[in-house]
Structures are given as structure tokens and as C-alpha cells.
Length: 95
Length: 312
Ligand SMILES: [Fe+2]
Ligand SMILES: [Fe+2]
Image (cartoon, rainbow over all chains, first blue to last red; front, side, top):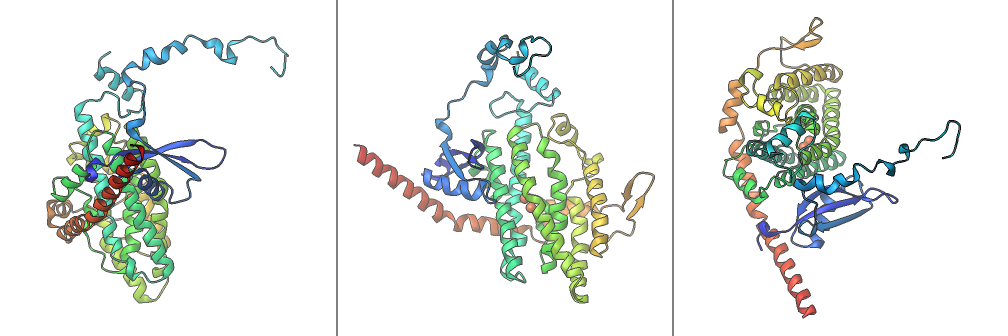
């Protein structure tokens, strides 16, 4: 396996407890252990994280960019899902 | 909806292009060239300063310099990763660097003769890089813009540590002050050339602006850098080697003397003081590190085989 065949890993960092892991970038590494070590060195040199995830890029299933409309548009005409859709009489509070 | 239309609409909206979006081939190719060249500059840029790590004047300065040089390696990685989202392979980009088919910033072909040069590089070279890179945080290509945000966050320490080195030297013995002045004298003009040729001779700029990759012209950015730097030089008690440098109240900018771009073109052509040395060192470092990559690959293969054996 030359470095050309090293899989690509996506790196996610939890910046502090209570927050979700957020995608920060990617890197190549021969295995998960090296991916974690390299992710620490590349993405958390300034204590940017308290937890790291590395995920093989090939394992990510993504929605199709070309089918964005048919995939997401069904939510567009359901504005009654938002609280601002409703009319509330003047003076009613805590609603 | 044709791909071209949605790309144009996205740009017109100041939206961001993401890796799987349709994009014109010229846009993709131009981004690959720019991001690769940027990545190469980050990693070649480790050499002039790396030259002084073992001779830093104190443990504090040594730790700082190592952290800075490590950051530059990180910047290279962020950028190679951004380039790879465009469908190229890092190995191929490194290959193109090593065979001279892709370039890196000419600023790194100047030697670091004294410790003060480390200060001048941080203050002027990283300073100029920041002015170039801040607008790239809003570049139309998402992965490049995000990489630039990380880079810019880290750069400001680079510039400050350089300024601090020069400030210390400039307030030291007369010999130390002279050393600081000499470093600034040698790095000022090359730093100004980091912004590229004058707008009139910059053929790719207009297209780059139209694509939302470049946001300001070379001359605008150069002027911004000069305006920021002149008062800082005064604070250091050092002079900048341009007799024509003076405040122009009418323009609200500093006027400056002409830049000798023939020198820049010489350095780009490979005739700078350190071109051969930088490339030689880079190729050697890559070859000398081959066993580490091979060992990591062999270990991963062995572990995978063992895991497969356990399952079977
Ligand atoms: Fe950098
Ligand atoms: Fe830097």
C-alpha cells in the first residue's frame, strides 16, 4: 500500500463538552489509529478540542447535489411548521 | 437547469461552490493550480526559518519558532486537503512540485543570514501573507475559504512573534539594532513583490476576480500592506529602504517608490539565491521520509490482515 492508497478520513472535533462534533477537514492515513494521531496534530494544536472523530470518507453517504430540489423542496410549502405562521391576538403572552 | 447557469447564479449571489457542485473546468483547473501553489509555499516556507531553530537565542524563542514552523506544515496540509476535494491527488501535486512543474512563492528563495531575518520574515512575510489571505476567507470555493479561515487565525501569532523579535533587537545593542535594520532592508522589497506583478501586467487577475477567487487587485493589497506597515516600522524605530515613502494626505495612502520586478522574474525563473537549495532539501526530506510512510503502510496492512484472520 503506497501513500497514494491511504484512505481519506474526515475529521470532526468537539470543541468543548456540551457541543456537537463539527467537521473541520480531512487527511490521509493508513489506519484509524494514525488518522486520530494525525488529526490531533493537524487540527488541535491550540486545544481546539476535547474529543475527536475520524470517519473514512468512503463511508459517508451524501445526498446528491444534483437532486437538491426534489430532495429538500417538499419542506418549502409547509410554513405552518414554524411558529411565526400563526396569528395570535394582541396581548396574549407566553405563547 | 444547465450546470453553467447554476454556477453563474451561485457566483452572482456571492454563494459558495462546494466540491460536488457542477463547475466549469477552467474554474476547477485554476483553483487546483492556485491552491497547490499555496500549499507548496507553506511547506517550502518551513525551510528559511527551520534553518534557525537549532540556533535560536533562547529556549523561549526556540519553542516559539518550532511552533510557528509546525503551523506552516499544518497550513500545507489544510491546503492539500482542500485541493484534493477538486479531484486531484496530493501525491501528484508533490510530484509536480518536486519536478518543478508547479511553483511556490518566490519569497522563500531568499536566504536567512542572521537571527534578525527570522524576525523580518514573521513581521513582513507573514504580514504580507495575511493581507493576501484574509480576502481568501471569502473565496467562492468553500473548502479553500474554510482552510483560509483556519490559516488566518494562526497567522497573527506568526506576525507578532516576528515583530517582537525585531523590537527586542531594535532596542538592544547598536550591533543588534543594525542587524535588525539590515534584515528589514533585505526583506522589504521581496515582501512587496509577494503581492504579484502590477495590475496592468497581471493577466489572470480579471478572471480570478470574476470567479470570486480574488477579491482585491495586487496593487490594492500591496497598498494596504504598505499603509499598515509604515507606522509599525516607526514603532520599531527602524526605517524602510524606500526614500520615496511618504504620506499622501490627498490619497489617504502612503506613496512609495517603483518596485524592480525584473528581480522577481529572475527569482521566478529559478535564478534566486536559494531556489536549488530549497528544492534539493524538499526532495531529500521527501525521500528520507519514505521509510516512515512504508512502515505505517506495512503496520496498517498487518493489523488489517490480523483482524481479518480473527474474523475468519
Ligand atoms: Fe502559513
Ligand atoms: Fe505563517
